[in-house]
Image (cartoon, rainbow, N blue to C red; front, side, top):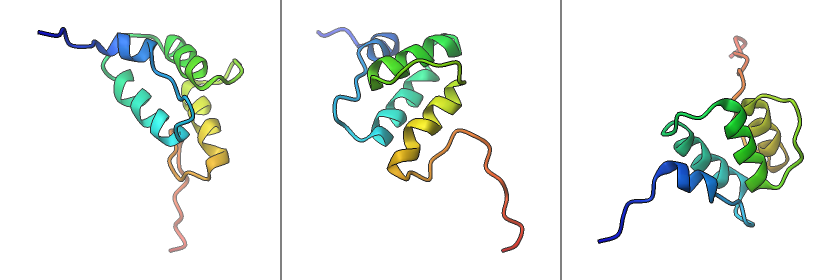
Length: 85
């Protein structure tokens, strides 16, 4: 019988590896809620696997920045309400 793969192990081995960034972000966020790690540790995992440069942004800013070039409407940041509709 094969032992289950723990979320920690999946996060440590997560790799964008040419997959769409949206898919990568979705998987990372699903796993992030299953581990007791700090935001800083999650940022390291995110940037390491996405192979992006490290900065002082929050995890939400990192994710939004990574999704921005793909034109994805998904965001972790605050969304302004449009009251003109």
